[in-house]
Length: 264
Image 1 (tube, rainbow, N blue to C red):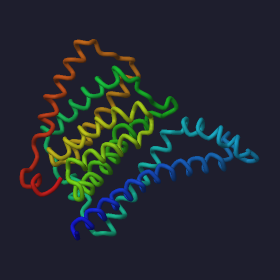
Image 2 (tube, helix red, strand yellow; image 1 turned 180 degrees about the vertical axis):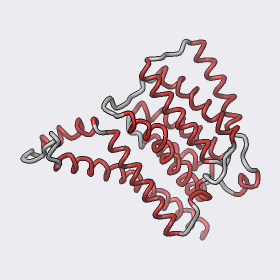
Image 3 (cartoon, one colour; image 1 turned 135 degrees about the vertical axis):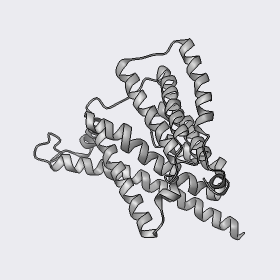
Image 4 (cartoon, rainbow, N blue to C red; image 1 turned 120 degrees about the horizontal axis):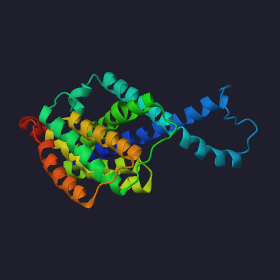
């Protein structure tokens, strides 16, 4: 009974952490709206605008500022994580799996990310913010985006859920939450599958960096496919699928046996 109660508490604590992650996005959106509404140089003026007009204009405004909202949200999440682990006097690198990496796993994770991206965006048109600047795009797609999302989902939440319901169900739950956080119905489908792959690579390689590399390669290749309009032939698609299975096996290798037995 005591074990069950402890597992429930850990599970609810993990859910709370995810809700805080979502709230960071809401806070970022609110901050961006507030900044542009009071900035004299902005043409986004809410003064005298009624509630109905505000509701109508807000979605269009936020869609044009999605990259800025994401950037602010990532910064809030990263800052919050660092503060919590500093307050707890616990090693973030050790807890999340950043303290270890394997070159072979990193290399094949990058290759796997490229293959999965080519397969995905051959069937699903990639979406991006046309107003995004080059520097912001680099930060979001290459550095901050994959790093913060993997740190949160595969570094922290996966371990928290695994401690209460096991690694298998923990991977499924974090993949569902990862998919839902992308909101777009089409994205929800393929990001769920991507989340399962990322969780598997993270657990088997015992390194968060392998998941980060895979995620970054997926995003970068997706941006390239969107920009060039590249589509794969049926033969190339089959080849990418076969290569993905091969790359997945090698990306999952290189983990530490002792660390694997004790934790994720």
